[in-house]
Amino acid sequence: MTSLEEVLREAYKLAVLSEKEVREVTETARSAKALVADIVSSAGISAEVDVYGSSARLTWIPGHPDVDVFVVLENRDVKPESVVRALSEGLTSRGIKWRLRYAQHPFITLSAGWCEVDVVPCYKINPGERPITAADRSPLHHKFLAERLNDELRRDIRLLKIFMRTVGVYGAEIKVEGFSGYLAELLVTYYGSFLEVLKAAALWRPYRVRIDPSGRSAAEKFKAPLIVVDPVDPDRNAAAAVSLASMSTFILASRRFLKRPSLSYFLPRQGHAVRHLSVVEVIFPYPGEPPDIVWGKYKRAGRALREQLRECGFRVYRWGVESDEKTHVSLVYVVDQTELPPFVLHRGPPVYSDDVDKFIEKYVAEDVVGPFVDGIRVYVIKRRRYVSVVECISRKLGAGNYTIRVNAYEGALVQKNAWIT
Image (cartoon, rainbow, N blue to C red; front, top):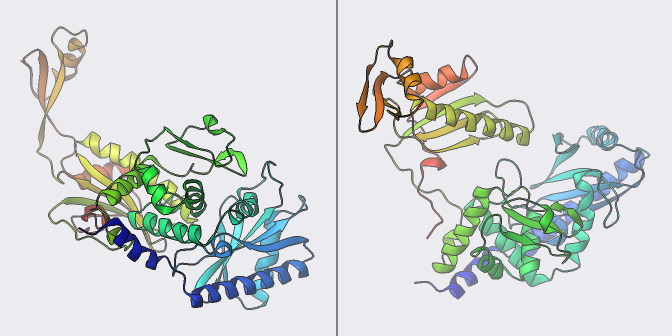
């Protein structure tokens, strides 16, 4: 059995940023900052332009850098949309490719060599001041963390992010509903190391964990599976995006890693697909909307269709939403079977219940077996309304631009877990 020390020794090698990568990301950030500052200044907008986030703190996952340039406005009369408009015009005139994206307000993403640069407008706020946009906290986040980080903590943050990415809980976007990079950094600075985060998480219980890095004890105002009070904003839960499933997955991964350490928790790979499962996919063309909106919309639709499949008599073992965020988005259901028997035993109330007459009157005139008594209850054997899973889905969704595929899926929902030991 490989010891924890041996696994960590090898895992830490995966969290090392090479001098070349640091140099290239630093140069990209410097160039992007200068470019944005020039465009903003030329447009007559007074703002501080700086780089925040993981690229500024050297805490990105090796090989996966992201550069965040913030246009920090002091004048509250200048709208983020005005900054985005000036940036789009300035980048276009310079022949630089960019695309418009949306969070709480629009921002711009541009390609800069081997990584992307997000350019985000925000307002300057002081500690304790209520933010106008969600991005306003970012400079304060950076200051809080930069004052506390050292090389060892940065290394452990990178390792925690790799661990979280492998087990599928890294990212606060709706697609993942997991741990943001900022939250991962807060956890390491709070607990002191990667290993201490896992030791603590192994003992977590959903809805019972309240962490306040600032020591203000402001956690009681929140209700969520995991509460981590934002040290720069006591009215914000920095873990608000973490779903119950993501928190529970992280607890399980932490427990299992500490019990049976393995590099599998740091090396993302696919598991083999288990054959002969019954799986149905509903495939839609990808809509021209921002990813967070698309994921949110189809997760809601997926939950509703899951309940409708159950109403039709299909047992849903597992389900999920999958998309390449370009061409399609799919609702995937692993079910007990795709074709049901034409008849079903339907249980009614006890014979002494006040509801028994209503049950009998409903079925006495219908083409059913019964009503009859078995034990103390009344039953009927009736025809199913839907026998085929395809028929059920088609009737529930109605006419629309979608395709239904049966037993052609071999994705993550039917694969053996590749990281768990």
